[in-house]
Length: 466
Image (cartoon, rainbow, N blue to C red):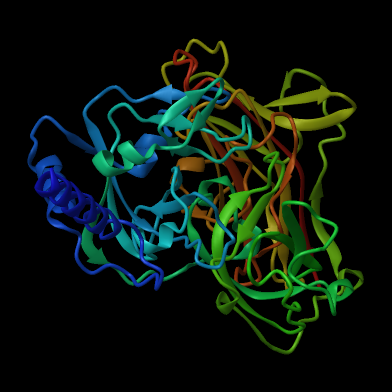
């Protein structure tokens, strides 16, 4: 009996030793050895010819608004961890993007694990076996697409501990992550889940002396940042968890660079940035001063207030051209608003491409020109059903396809934005152009494809100058 008891006791201590060797240690050091089991499971996944790799964008395309979709096929996704919960600003989640330096898509991963930075450290290359997992939102209609391990009504639940062990694998590679530099006016829903850098940013003057978190907030605290973007300020929200260990730090008062994860607030109403660490904020330069709008005059303006409802657009000096299909841009009146619209719905065309080109704008009569406009959408369910904006200085006023059209970067309405709500483009600097400038709006879609038969709207096109 004594011998048996001794062996039992020894076995217990051996088990405890083995268990404690597997859990996270208190020094939170980044692991350098993946362990034999994890490495073998990853290699087995990558060698299995039955599995296909999906891009993060392809995974996100499997999401249906307001639902949780289970992935049943043998597929996996690779990404690089760009968030860290070491400072407490994230909880039981991490974000991955598709490239360390030049990402095109990012996604949230929710899992039943705290201190994820210990295992899934910043820059770690991660492979996720998606078979049986779910793609959806943790909060319905918040616009943040995520990977989870279960279905909870219309939302997804966390990846379980067992699923983590068998499906969420690290490689041995930890890459150097460089934040993607973006003009604050151009940040949109496509950047959600990505690690980006905003330049020329500062907190509003009213926040001087305030901390990252308002003590009256229960969960997340928004702080308004601003940037001098030519004419006036462009605002952007920094959101910090009330559980972040830097919540009581006083906000810096200068101007500079900030890097963080693009995500959304709880209800999905606003695109926000979340910090990995306050070390990603360098506001050590002098505050900026925007250009005074009173110094500018209106060089060109079209508000479509002469629109006749549901008629082909024929405003003088505008070009309305169908490159493919028979549909033209129309004039529309709705809810007291008048605007230009291109709709692919019910056209019956396998391809619709419609151009709307402005009259010529004299760029030599003034300086410091800025373009701005508004776009809205309805029933857009695919990124291939798109609107683009171009400018040209060699358009002859007649042959659209013979001109040289240069795409411009603007804050355009996206699939994730609310329907029928106009989005401001921001002020776009076009002062480098000389001669006569033409602005073109181009919509691509198809009337015979329910994924491509959406509608785009344009309003309040103008150019300001000095």
